[in-house]
Image (tube, rainbow, N blue to C red; front, side, top):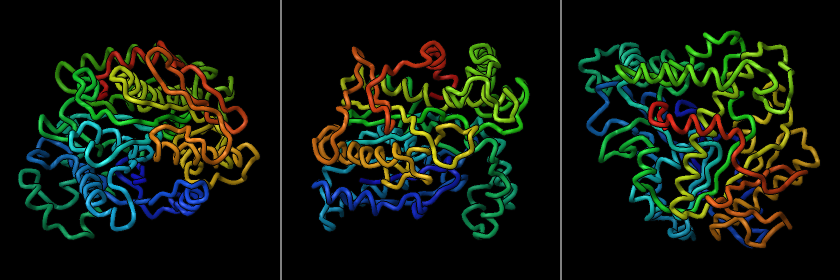
Length: 423
């Protein structure tokens, strides 16, 4: 099982304590399905994901190429550690899940892995030229001229490079440095939605899902107006020329579909509670969660189902330990459970869910379905199909199959504008 860490493509590391797989590996042995766990780093920020009009000639998506290089190494050498190169499962969360799903567009991936687990992430990709301003800011901060930036950057010392990175990482807009469309021979040859239509993706079994409140970690807590939300979205989904007109129309519709009504916002199921913040926070959190995670995820599920790819999908709703209440069941909340180390304080429900999640994950790694009969007695996880689009409600006290079409009208509108929104 090969893990790709998250961090918005600009932060994170493989050695983080939350990715300590001791419990997962030990439990895999105890249940009779032992795994070898592999973790890796990849280039981040402007060093891993250059942007701008000059990022061509193979210079895009360097972080993704690092990951592919590691997967090829694992394929070539894992047998020396007792592993099976034909039974590699690639799994990740957030940027790690986005990366994992993007690799499905690369034909060589079918030779390197046999299954994928996507925790809060599905394919997306913007245009590098739309992020020209942030790239030029980085180049200038590194003491280089834009016209000869590549030659100059190759000789910049590490101290200068780090200061330049710190100068351009925008914590309120972390997707400035992220995977970008890189042409017919690249890793993301077109918008994912178009690649789906053409059937240009690996037909590899998938286990994927989301947390209930994916969007709550991303809005500025001080957001207080519709205008601020719109400006944030315009910055996050930049367009140019005629596309800017189309984007404006999409944003108009989105602001209408997501009204300023706290009971409809995220964290969900919290009524009119605003946690001492403006009601616009819950509105923005709902918007970002659906734009960044739910709609791309559902688009991916439908494409896979149409191609008869085995899929198992979930919605994670386990209440967190000591997380801020306005986050709800937030992005990244399920990582600890997959690693068998639920957050403190540990409730009875959390204690029950963590081993069951490890059972599902390990079963999928071995059998390409989560129902191998080993480990704890647990609910059968039924596959997601077009005829029966159902998902598993992942909750220690309420483990059951539920419909996978929540917020159907809103999500279908977003999916209909996939190309404009980078999906």
